[in-house]
Length: 241
Image (cartoon, rainbow, N blue to C red; front, side, top):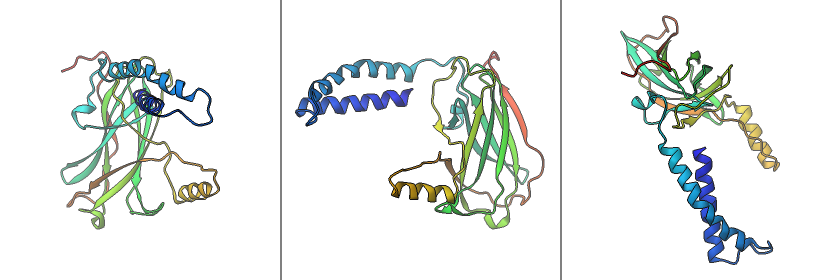
């Protein structure tokens, strides 16, 4: 919603300025009048954007306490953080539901390709299935092995997510948007199709995954030991400490 309002404000502002400084679009009847009139929309659109930005959440934004920006897929918000415990490396997928009804989600990430969809580090892909309560906040801990070859090196990961609300979303509880995440990994074939279709003047674009980077730790186990563990820390109706 906020991104749509911001785009509307920008378009109306440009149209209004052009309408008052030029004679409008040549060959389009009454274009100057309509471009000038578009400025009328600016004030209510700005007021609505300010309201959307500062309206009060009905549930705490727990993820904001850990990171400035987090990812989102259709109301399911999350962030992927590294963790080391007793010489073993873990991914911590911290998550929170923006809506008042439960959702099911899948978070998956793998090493990003080095060049135009090809050349991927020999590291395991992570796939985490999450059940998130209404407005719930929790953490899924995933054991992960890092071969010595990659320890201490910077690595890019491509990230996707899928979310479903079996009973519908219901009322929105938190109004801060996360960074959008695609639901399909991108391959070398996807890149080729995009390039060729663009050259043919019929562009076809795939939903892109998000990218995150980090330097992998050193002196950790090369093999993953243990199972994925999920814990819900807070759900709608719980007290806030």
